[in-house]
Image 1 (cartoon, helix red, strand yellow):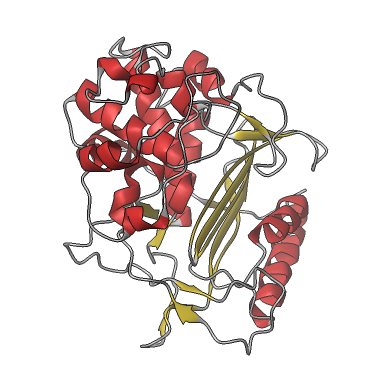
Image 2 (cartoon, helix red, strand yellow):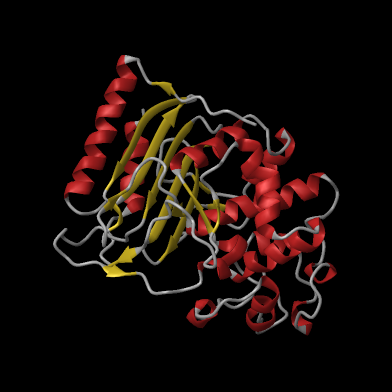
Length: 348
């Protein structure tokens, strides 16, 4: 089992960075714009680990380092890694047709490839909100919501259906349910004990509730919060059903840095831009697992984000996985993009 050693940032420069980051977080929290947990690290050393706000407002349960927060679309990074692990074992090829693994797809979806799904070039329609109103297996979700208007090549279109369909490909190819495969291949080997897949049928200790008021950093702390609607997060499967903590997610980053999940060659493939251009709303050039942002900072940054109602997540790291910012929140009261940028810059 991998052991995470977070060494204190003891240098003068590190102490200054910690102070700057702590001040950013405190200012955002005091303004009512941050309710969640943060980890910032550089060169394998912890710079700052903070938590602010409530995991459950009804019972005034504070967020702590071990509070489990749904990470929404950051789940897609795990799904991409699992797929590439099967690729390394020659169990799948990126140019394989999805119909090789999933039967019953619409006629105009028969030629979709695994790479089409990984890079959001499938042309599949986005699912309606009703897709999360009742519990659905991955197979049933696919039967209802895999829809494509034309058979022509598609432009980039970020959506969850691509990765829910990829979830089913993984399950068929690996002969394991997605939660089991995730545990066996990533969570257990890395000691990510506070991470897993949401299941509404069981009690998950320490799991935060979600809240929203649609202010995204523009509102005042006095603006009331609403409970997130009762949806089935588990329906998101490999597109967004995971929960985790900043500490656990940092273990994943370190494992990618040290090639403990994928070979060095395959890790480069995970990070390689797929010649799709810079996608403004995704803030980067799509890779198989990240978005490469070469416009905001002095050096390119790998980004991965997630948002489902009040649950919001941000992962920023340099291409060597040495400079890392992880933000998890259970409200949408903050602008995590702006906050993450400030913290990442403060790491210098």
